[in-house]
Each structure stands twice: as structure tokens, then as C-alpha cells.
Amino acid sequence: MKTIYSDDHRGHDGAKEFHLGQMVPIFEMPRRMDMILERLRATDLGPIEAPARFGDGPILAVHAADYLDFLKQAWDLWVAEGGNDFALPYTFVGHGMRHKAPRSVHGRLGRYAFDLAVPFVAGTWQAVRSSVDVALTAQKLVADGARAAFALCRPPGHHAMADMGGGYCYLNNAAIAAQAFRDQGAARVAVLDVDYHHGNGTQSIFYHRGDILVVSLHGDPEQEYPYYLGYADETGAQEGAGCNMNLPMPWGTGWEAYGEALIAGVSRIANFRADALVVSLGVDTFKEDPISHFRLDNEHYSRIGEQIAGLGLPSLFVMEGGYAVEDIGINTANVLSGFEQAA
Image (cartoon, rainbow, N blue to C red; front, top):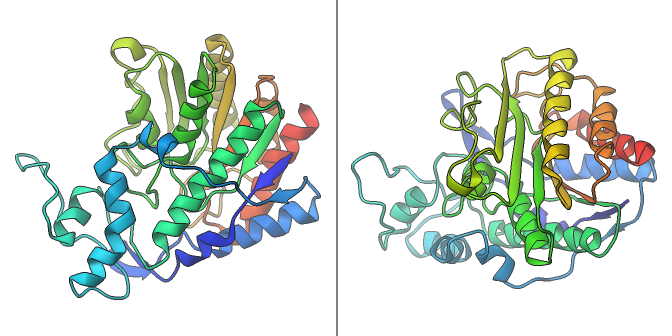
């Protein structure tokens, strides 16, 4: 299995996030990628290659043009208004307020984000743009006939909505890749999100569509971020009725319950008869993850890969979360190796 990766992500570094009442170094750090690369090389999973460059077209098939323009300009706007270090919003659009992007960068930061976990530094845009190229390069490998490919993306993407970022996510790599499969001839595409946190962005982007099925296993939003999407009764609307499946689980969930949910999700995908599969691969379901509350262990990630392989679909793995840095490489490689061995 080929891995697509770019060092451009390293420019997205040095910011902080608001966690448990204080500003702390952001959990979504460059070292996550170092640990994954180290493990991929140690397990000899396959070659690691640089991405090709793509234009804005695939992004605009999923994201709003004004939002993309803002991402490109955000850091320069911040600096022009006297900002330094890193940019974060301090006010957000709320109920009864106008959803308008004012001239001020402060107003735009709050219009185009739904939380305090999408900071900007000087290298953020290049990292975000390169992350999309990584996903699209790996997607093209699969579309051109590869059984599977791994897009080692950073920043992650599954929380990013069409016109808003959050949860460390700026552009939705998995959604962009799923749409690319459709644009290149796949009649139906499935997205399987195994990140601990619900992929609210992916759900919202495809919620009214019947050609892309979204299945997500995640922490129950009654207890867990992102709180306002991810409930089991969200099953799609209009043409997308029945094409969204949420499998929320409570804090403390271990492999037995998680494995049952995974079987249910995989079964739904099999019944959908997709032509291609996009896996939002988060490994923050690990028992020692610092911001998550599931109890999976290292060996369980191989079983996840095996279950996915059982679908027999051309499969694109897109990296999302995972913040137990010492084990992120083991868990990620275990999913991919489990898939390869069972395929």
C-alpha cells in the first residue's frame, strides 16, 4: 500500500488551543506524523511518496468559495490588523445574528469557525492546502486501480463543513476525496468514519445526498464533542434519506461494543453497494488518548483493518485524529496492516 505524505504540514505549528479552562499547546502537533512515518517504515508497509499538486476545483466541489478565499488570506489579514503569534476568534455567530463575513479579520475568524481549535499561524494555509493534495493524490491511485492507498493528512479534515472549520480541521479531506471519486465516475461512494469524534463536517456536506453514504462510529454527542451533531436519529434528508448512519457510544466503550458497532456499520456499507470507500482513519479511540474516552487497545486496530478489508472495496484511508502520540504510529499501522493481510 502506498502512503502519500508531505512535509508541508510542519509549518502549521506553535499555536495553542483552549482546553479545560486554559490555553495549552495544541494536541494536534507535527510529531504525530513523525511517529506514524517511523512505524510505517519499520513495518515496511509500502513506499512513501510526495503528493501531486491539484487546483482549487476539487475543493470548490465541496467547500464554499468565500470560505476558501478566507483560508488563503487569514494569516495575512491577521498580520495586517496587528496580530502576531497565532490567530484565533474571540466572537462567534450566534442565534439571531447575521451570518455575514465583515471586513475585520476578527469577524471573519468567528464567521468561518465554530470553535477555538482552528488556529492560524504563518504556515497554516500551506499545510491545509498540501493536506488536500495528499488526499487527492492517494484518491487518484485508488481511482486508477490500486486496491488501497493511505493519505497521511495533516491537518485532519472531518470536522470541516462546507463554509466553516473546527476541531483542528480546515478543509474536509475525506469529503473532497469522496466527491472526487464521484466526479471520476463512481456511481456510489461510502465514507466510514472511525475517529473517536463524530465527523460533523462530512455528515453535513453529504446529508441531503443519496449517492454518498456516511457511516460514523464515535463518542455519544450527549457527552462528547462536537455535541450538536452525531445522534443516531440523524439518518439523512430528502434525497439522502437513509444515507447517514451514526453509531454513537458512551464513554468507556471497549472492543466488544465497538466491534459490534463496526460490524453494523460495515454491513450497512455492504448493502449500499458502493464503488469506492473512503475511511476517515482516526485512532483516538485508543485507551490512553488524552482527549478521548474509549478503551481500545493496540491489537484492536488490526481487527478494524480486517473488517474494512472484508468489504472488498477500493479503499482510501485518510488520516484524521489520534493524540496518544507514543502509540499513534502503532495503531495507525495496525489498521493498515490488518487491512493488507485480510485483503
